[in-house]
Image 1: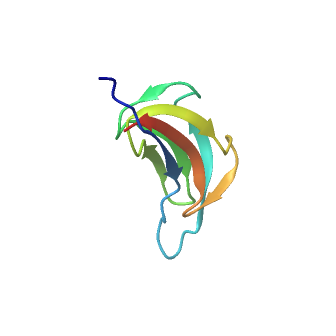
Image 2: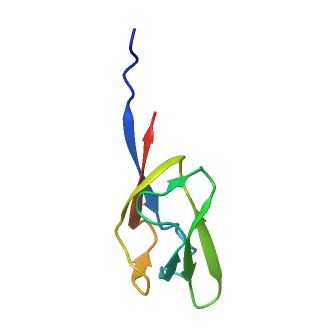
Length: 87
């Protein structure tokens, strides 16, 4: 008996960084489209006026899209990319 795999697309979201910080600059993607990531892997470097952060993969799977590029500005809650996973 063959099992049907369910594919899930998990958004990579810019976190809300606090009351005083509404946006951050995308410095660098640490992965490419097609790369396999594990949940918690560091995948994007972002900078605010006060801090540089490395954002983590929200799930294990394959990076299927990058919706922002280096030097783009993103706000809290923006979708930065997508990880596609077999659930």
